[in-house]
Length: 284
Image 1: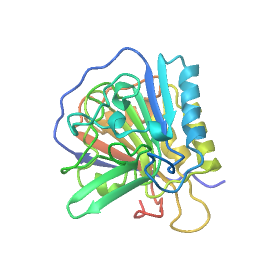
Image 2: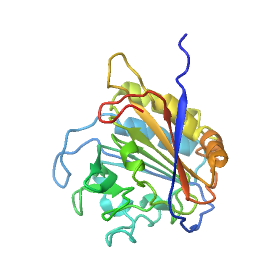
Image 3: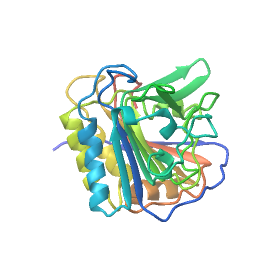
């Protein structure tokens, strides 16, 4: 039986951000895009497993007696619902139910991209509706950021796209557009897959992470290392905390139904499986 790959982490400091309000209700806002064709769509190659993947989390939040779980796909993933008004005049992410920052748990499943050159470092998500703009840029340490998570209610965000937590962006002070009780960003360094095995792994992750292991289970369950080279799927957890001890606690013991406070956002910690080597990114 092969030994478990070694978990690794990095730490990065940034400026202190103020805390935001928290809502007592338990809420989820979950989006996917499978269909990128047709009127008002943003265009691109279709995906197949977004509804199954995100739908499983929606079902579990219902089973766990969340007060609301807002779950929609395709054209419903609109720029207004995931952008922050303080970053873009069209942003409405604080609007109850549909606004992704109005919930405690957020998720987006789509295509993703990144930029790590020319003094710009960020990730982006391809949206479903082209009525405003087709890409949400987040995590930028420079001009052009669209999202700011946690200043309404968000505790954790899953961005199930390629390049959603890219090391080159994180290394250049990206992914600090967060506030309040936002403690965990779960994503991928490099390419992520759209397929049955990915969805099965995601379902395992959700099922085992109600009360703890939100970061740990994500990295363990969603990292895939098939036969071949430069084709790994490298799951990453970015945890916000005052220090390493607090970050490890959040990584191990935060769950979908048991949130942990980051204290502040002066430091973020980047958790991954050592040696993971994806298409679309340097070996970790």
